[in-house]
Image 1 (cartoon, helix red, strand yellow):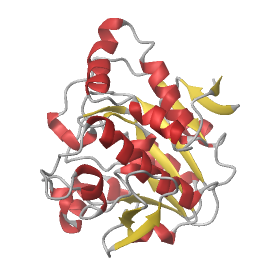
Image 2: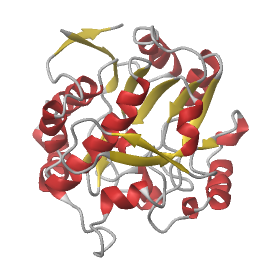
Image 3: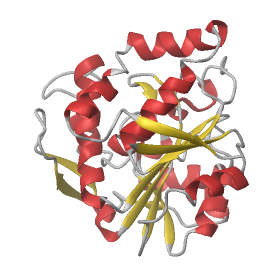
Image 4: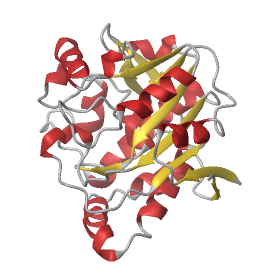
Amino acid sequence: MVKVYFTKDISPEGLLKLYNKVNKDIQGKAAIKFHTGEPHGPNILPKAMVKALYDAVPNSHLVETNVYYDSPRQTTEGHRKVLHINGWDSFATVDIMDEEGTVMLPIKGGKHFKEMSMGSHITNYDSMIVLTHFKGHTMGGFGGSIKNIAIGCADGKIGKKMIHTYPGQDQWSVSKGPFMEHMVESAKATVDYFSPHITFINVLRRMSVDCDCAGVAAAEPTARDIGILASTDILAVDQASIDMVYQLPPEELHDLKERIESREGLHQLDYGEEMGLGSRKYELIEIE
């Protein structure tokens, strides 16, 4: 059975303990896919945690792509200004993977897509570590590892448009079940490209109903911080994250559950299973 590791220790030390449980296939030049967030975002991952992972992985590089919505991060120039504001460039040079164009990666078994447009630099890497702030999401219901690479590796002009927009329709015309399926298929392109040299870490802290894309406008979290989960299986780590969130007391769970279920977010998990993205059955192993 797939192993998912868990610690309540939300710290650089806790993060590295879990990473060391799931890093056996990380080799060569390693991309750390994280979320840069909007300027001064209150919920983005602590810089010390990201830096600890970056420092611990030889030949690693923080990676991101430009965004599809109205934001300074829509352009590489604006994105780099946000990187500076949020302090990411104080310890690393972040690779904006679509800065120099795009590349198409194949999607095996997709019913919506046969390939997905990604930032071209993705093919410069031998491995990927998916470091995710697990939280709610305006369109996805929740944003876990699937969302992080599905939207986050797709380039800002073509790939994200493929996921969000039906041809000739409104920018955000794809929603609910079809949107979840688009995300899963995009995520599968990245997982298949790197497999088995890819691993996944979800940090369950400051879980607003809003993505870090919302920046300072994000709703204040009503759920407590839970911990960190890690696995070599993307579906298992997202399923375990949802399972832990759904164990929260009703007053803490209410807002997240409403956001997840009103967007049909759980369809990420059953369609992921249908697509062969990973396993929803797992063994949870707690690390002190």
